[in-house]
Amino acid sequence: MNPITMTTQIDPLLLQALREDISSEDVSTNAVIREKTPGQVELLCKERGVIAGLAVFERVFQLLDPEVQVEWFHQDGEQVEAGTHLATLRGDIRALLSGERVALNYLQRMSGIATYTRACAEVLRGSKTKLLDTRKTTPNMRIFEKYAVRVGGGQNHRYNLSDGVLLKDNHIGAAGGIAQAVRLARDYAPFVRKIEVEVENLEMVEEALAAGADIIMLDNMSMEEMREALRRIAGRAQTECSGNVTLEKLRALADLGVDYVSCGALTHSAPILDLSLKHLRPLEAK
Image (cartoon, rainbow, N blue to C red; front, side, top):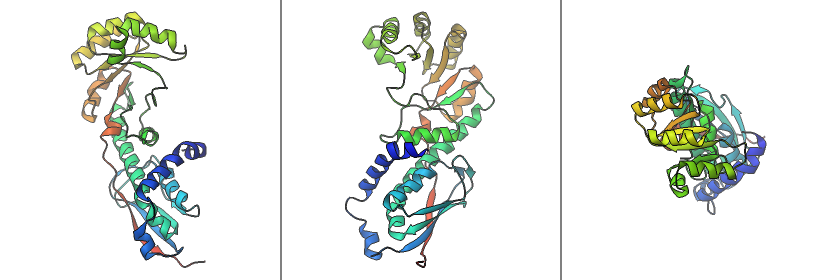
């Protein structure tokens, strides 16, 4: 993450997380460490996975103490094994202790997403199908989770509702039909915006084609229906499939020849990667 993103978008979220964990003081740390004490601790990986979020992890500690220094031995996107020594942190022991849980929460979550995304992306390797995330993210964690998807080898769908036009079933119902929804979107949205329409059956596919949709999302359709839908679309629109997409289903979806597959599981169901801070010890003051 670049410095501008870090300070303008990330810092307020990190500070909010720190305030959640330290409402007035870290009473455990303050009870045993009464004054500034230099120390160091090691960041260790306890299972195999892909690392994502190292800059976020480091920034948590620097918000508590700008003098904290991190010596990195790996970088985002690397696959590491259990027992890997990822980094050594040095600084005031009070900051190292107080920031530990918040920093690990971010790094474990982001690395878990990157690990699961990498597994999914490997299934699609060699096919035309691109892997997308969704807006099914943890509140106030979207920027971190979507970054982790990219690190893992996936691509981001729209970041938020301001990013693009996606007419789903309820938009279509509110407008009175696909044709009306697309027409209204064309009248309102800037011309540079593509219009994507979610469809649930072959009749809706025909309506979306007739309305001139740029992208047609095949939502929760059977493999047979999607195969027929792709035959009818025949390149006249880009195609995306979605709906309960899992790692196990990806190969079959890629074999259909769909352009994109969106997978909410990348962000809402990926398990964390187990990491820990160990071997904290005081250092002699210089």
